[in-house]
Length: 297
Image (cartoon, rainbow, N blue to C red; front, side):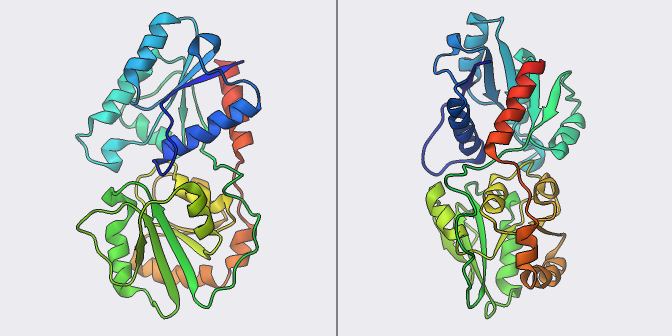
């Protein structure tokens, strides 16, 4: 079983899909099943609505190969109801032999859009273990360090929620750092904002972090949350999308600012308990899940 990924992978700071597919490719290479030329691969893995012409061209040249479609998020929920990228992805699925959803939440919400592929499975993302891992001792900080990261400036990443926290959080007890892109009209007085950083720099910040915060809404499988959990950092996240499926016992969920402030204290005084309760799949396990699905279609 050999694989080619139909995606133009990019180095440096980038979105979650790119970051995951990059480490998935690396893992397939380590397992000696990745091929750089689609003609030499048994399976063509493609993603969402991206690189349609390239993938269709491969399909026309090699119609007997297995084509597997990794579905991205639901842009009509995550962005706006007229976002055509979701329609493109659903239409693009017609050339596939099998479909991979990133979470049960994503699968169920695609069903609501009458998208029910015949052969599908649920496989979450995973982080690069060379970068995001437990190979560090938890740092004892005078204040509790909170961190949030986002490559996307989409408002559903929680920027409005963070504006409220900027006024309500006790900054004598907490430091809050945001790394990434944010909307130009969003400004904070107390939250420290840093520009997007490459994965290794994000990892260094995670090693200094007590609690990772994510107010993202309708996100099917947040790579930021996965990177934090993989680094042994408990996560405090909005009770939305695929967040509960990722976090399990490795953190807590909140529903609004009042709930956030109340439950944050509970998480703060029990950080070590939640840290020890983190359970998340490794990239090797996730790659094996992909391979098993490739074999059964």
